[in-house]
Length: 308
Image 1 (cartoon, rainbow, N blue to C red):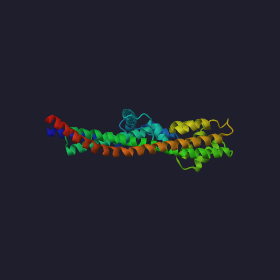
Image 2: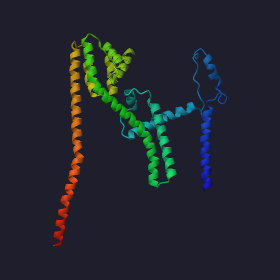
Image 3: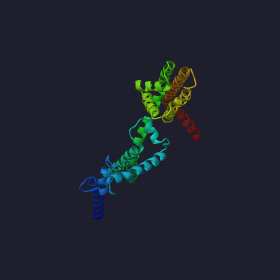
Image 4: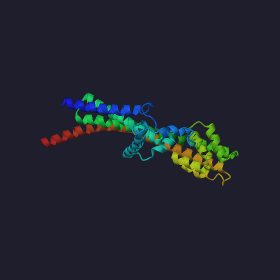
């Protein structure tokens, strides 16, 4: 039996070694000779910039072409099973991440596989009971998948909170610039170049979209959809009146004051809720001894009545 298990392990190791050596050797010129069409492509009239080398069936490029869409599909389905409804691309765009969805899902699945391997090694080394071993094996990939997802979700929520706090100040600055004679596009450019917060980074992207051909209102609407902040959705219709209203600065200032009052109201609600939560352990600590003191004479009375 031991010889059979050893033979299977040796076969699996040999198969993994063969696959790895094939992927490594496919990158070497002397082993993987490119075809004649690929060698002549840089000298053709349409290929003076050099052609991209396509690998064979067992090359790294073909492996990536298979793994990337598979990891993206598996990652999206697991995220939906965990209750994540917002698209990953929106969250990555919101926090200005340099990763795309496919690269993030590949890294996430890689961490899950590493967690599975780590849990399996711990289960083999410790040899716990079967339920605990299953817990080790299943918790490793779950943690490897959930930790990057939670990091992106936390960064997205933090970005939205910071955006909500910065928006009243930036709105007042925008109102002053518009009242001073700036156009909406020039005011947005000035705020994006002079500011250093999250709103300034988002406005830099808005200005980039305007230079690509979008109007100011369309670029701001894209920003509002990505940011998903209620205050920004309320401010957007007022900014859409930049070609119609003559007192746009006053309207934006009033909306900024309204946003600040809503922020203060939510802060007061949070403080009151936390103040009420402080009394929960105090109440429990006071009720438990009282219940015990009441239960002792009650049980003694029941004993006396049963004895009589």
